[in-house]
Image (cartoon, rainbow, N blue to C red; front, side, top):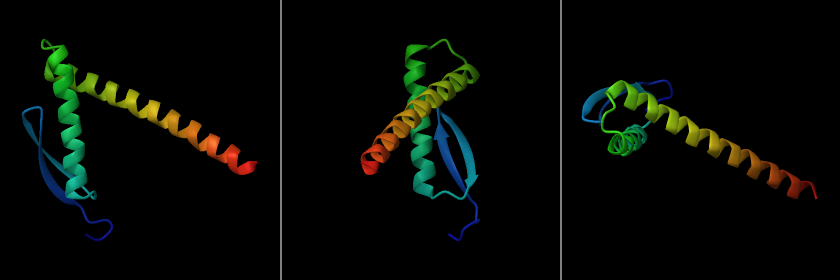
Length: 87
């Protein structure tokens, strides 16, 4: 697939079908969808009373929290490597 070409990929997330349009590979999009589905199911198991909108928002908040923690860890690691290279 050439850079800039978009494709349509159908995925299932929390028992609903979505069509994702983008430049990422099919395997990447399916992996992302699978991880979102897993996280939504995990949160749903702990909070069965949540409607889909609230479940989606909690999933987004949890995912962004994980992302920010990883970003912080990466920055610390990169800083540590830079300090070692400077020595």
